[in-house]
Length: 389
Ligand code: SF4
Image (tube, rainbow, N blue to C red; front, side, top):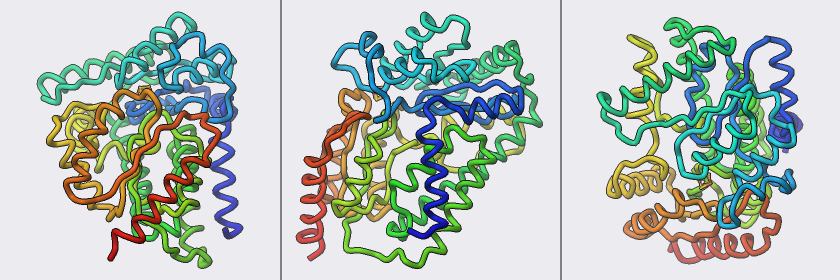
C-alpha cells in the first residue's frame, strides 16, 4: 500500500474507532451547533445540515465494545446492535449527541427508541416513522409531516429554523457527496484490486461522523491516492456481491477475511445510507417535497421497505448482473429479521440466473473468522474452477 493510501486509510480508521465521538465534540465546541445521531439506514441528513445540525450515523459498537449492561435490555435471540448502542449510551460515549433518531426499519429499532426515552429523558428521542406506503398523497404526505415536526423540534432545541434556500443548498451538498461515493464504488466495481473493500468500508464509516464537506475531502484524497498507486495489480479472485449487511455491520476483520480468502467484493450493502438514494435530488421547486419524493421513489430496494416480492427479485437479479458478480454471499447479522426473511426470495432470484451463492451469519463482535475463511475460500475456489469453463 502506498504511503498516501496508508495515510488516508489511517485517518478514516481513527474516525471509525472514535466511539466516544471526540470529533463530534470538537465540532460542537467549534460551531456551537447541535449533533443528532441516527440509526441505520436512512435519515434526513440534508434537512439536519440545513438547520446547522451535524448528523451522526451510529452503527452499533462493533468489535471494540464489551457488552455488560446492554445485554440486560434484550433477549438472547435479538441482534447485537441494540445491545452495543445501549452500552455506548450508558457508558457516556454518546454524550456529545443532543438526541437520536430511530428510523422505522424493524421492531428492534422501534423498541430501542423506547429504551432511549426512558434512559435519556433530557435528549431528543424520535422514532422516525418512515412510510411503507409510497403514494405521494399518503406516504408522502405523512413523511412530510414527520419531517416538519422534526424540524420544529430541532429548532426548539436551538437549531436554525428550516428554510427553503438553506435546504436547497444542503441537497446540493449531499448530491455532490453521493456522486463522489458512487464514483468510488464504480471504480471498485471496475477494478476491485485498486479499491479493497475493507479500505472503502473505513472511508464510508468515517463519513458517518464527519461533516459532509470533510467527508468530501476524505473521499477525494482516497480516490486520488488509489488512482496513483501503481503497485495494485489484479489477482485471480472471484467477483462476489455481498448482501444482507445493511444494518448491524460485520467486524472489519470479517470483511478482510472475505477478501483474503479469494473474493473481490464488487458490491455490498455496508453503510447503505450513502447509496440509499440512487440519484441526485432535484434542486428546483420545493426542496422539502423533493427530499420526500426521493425517499419514496428513488431509494434502493431494501429488506426494510415493502415493494413486493417480484420487484425485490428483479432488483436482486439487476444488482447481480450490474456488478458482474460471479457469486453472491448472503452475509447477514444473526437474528436480523428483515435480512433473513428476504433471503429465501433473494436466493431464488440468484438461482434463477444460475449464479452460485453461499450464506453465513455474523454478529458485530464476531471474533473467529477461520470457519468463514474456509467457507468463503472454498466458494471462491469453486467459482474459479467450475463457473468459468
Ligand atoms: S440488525 Fe436487523 S433486526 Fe437488528 S436492528 Fe438492524 S434491521 Fe433490526
